[in-house]
Length: 338
Image 1 (cartoon, rainbow, N blue to C red):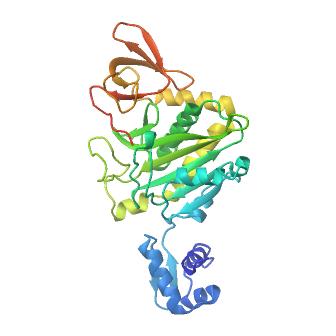
Image 2 (cartoon, rainbow, N blue to C red):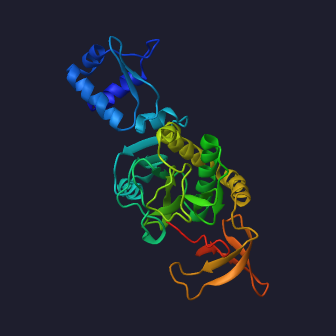
């Protein structure tokens, strides 16, 4: 373990009444010089971790707002959950697929891959998902306790889990735009992409990998008319509220708790998915083939089925069930997708 990480662990575990640990104690525990301790503290501060230094007292962790595997697991109660954390990675979805490629899919059940930054984040149809540091969380959850029969159900369950976590931590009223987007205050703050891992011998989907990107802070690199964040900007006050580790833990536990209850848990979450829908009762534009506009048509959303399908009414009054495709709210032109 790096000296930086050792220092952080010692400060977190401090039993002193005032929380201070002397530089000498830290150097002794880490088996390095006092100068190395100072460098480690400065490195931690550069990552946004607030550490107070007082002469003749030492160092004290002012708040536990760090973002790493240890901090995430401290906020998790489900002992099955394991966390892989990366400061930077190409894509948490890609990493999850690499882990599962070893063949022992069951061994990675409830593994959560987390990144502070993605260099090649992706959404539906390979679209780029912009994933810079200090503006969001990027995670992929593996679920492999039972064969996957309907990947859309995993996406809808994940959407409900994210909404619950956002409500719990930030007190926001999150809404869902079928099938995989989360909106807060009329702007998209989260995209979800579910992929399956297939056993080619049996032809079954053995595991679901649920990729989730949440914009906690508004990202100026995204279209400002639709994309947004829980908070508008990154400042000292916002830094205190980011709680990335707590959010990852809350999202993972909410989603896994839904899936662990099987059909009853999913059925209950589907009602919440419907209740949180942005689309029901609204006129939308449907793109049957994503990315193509020549076959687009207008319709009104009547409801959402228990299988996460969109029930719409066409202009001639006939009803149609959509299992896939893309929709945008006609009046608000909310058609941006990551």
